[in-house]
Image (cartoon, rainbow, N blue to C red):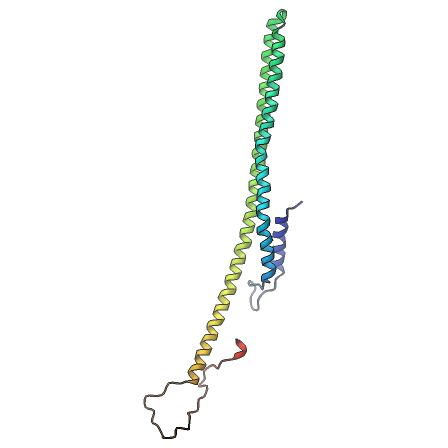
Length: 209
């Protein structure tokens, strides 16, 4: 069963795949800011929970090792008790020593095997949890960087449009208030104003703003 953070990543990818492309572009898409913000907000909230869950798995390594140590100590204690019982039987003293040494040797080997297996299992669990967590964080980072790039592209397009509108406004202002020529001669007719044509310049189109 997949985690909620994996589901969120799938939903974000499906959302991005379902977005429409901008006009005359096959790379830029139109994103609903509220929807993508909601998905990213929930992703940010769930990520710490996922990391804690896998940290808990990693911490179980110590519990596995403690259990292995307890089993090993129990085997050694049983072997020691059995050895003492054999030694107390005087008529089979030599045999008791031999059997006791063998029992202790076997118990020690079994205890070492338990410890080795427990250590290997705990390390494998730790590495798997760390790899899975790193994969999730890498996916989160890719989504965030894609959102940053998309936002930057929209911002650059918006600034370019504002600069264009500023140029149009300045051109229209020049047309409304042209500079007087140095050789201008007054005709005494103060009521007449020179005819101001567009002179081939671009007029301000208010519908563009």
